[in-house]
Length: 372
Image 1 (tube, helix red, strand yellow):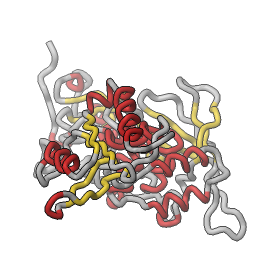
Image 2: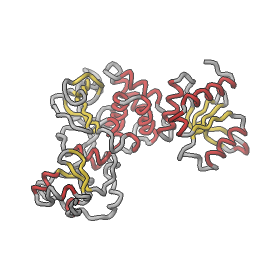
Image 3: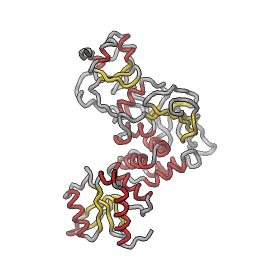
Image 4: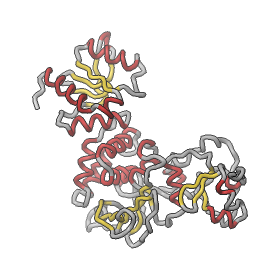
């Protein structure tokens, strides 16, 4: 029979080292196996009422990382507010100094970075080469470009800015879903916790740095969607991305990141819309405009999700972002009434019948005069 739940107030809504809690006499090893707690990784436990999201995964990782570690890439993007950048089950991406060696940990993707370098007469240096340990440990293999987490520099310069949790990790600092207003007792000395209110959550690279890391580390469809969201939310800008790309043009991953940045668009309103746009472009179609305004009857303006205005062809993606001024179907009807060819695309078709979507888009553009 499992032990009955036992949750001391000091551990409520916390992520902590189990060995510390046992040593403090707060719980027993047997009690840690109750439904009150969620085991996240070796010797790391959490209040089972906490949201199972990537912020929780980052808090768990923090308790087994050295203080020099910096959350980076898609994990940093999540902590800055891009919720689709990573999930509870995704690896936590971190940067550590190259001289530091971490043993393999399940759910952790470690990228090591060398010393910060600044060329003479330049305002900022190229990112040093990163090396990512091979799966399961072993010899590090060349991977991507990154930053020295030990050197805080201004975020506006496009390089890494080490952000204290009180300022930069607002998503990670939100109150737990079931714990709004609950009083959390002071943590006793000797108990290490990854607290929502303290520096227990590791610092992260700034949003522009996170965009660069994401563009270099992830496959393009996913990376573009994350960069789109960082742009849409105003967390970075095209100018900042151009600056960091120029600084690192000759470094590993520079060409890949510039290509991803070139595909990004702040107008995209969902990861699915970003994916559809990029897949159409990679398949050889001309790049569509995002959220293209179209004046229809009575002077009303509606926005096509994706549009080739020269051919009056649009894609209307059925999603939660449907227009408030009449809804998805009304928007399609108004566009058709204004002489546009409109291709409705559902999430199911994007996932399971993209070849069919591509054929229809090619045919519609061809009917309006486009030639490959």
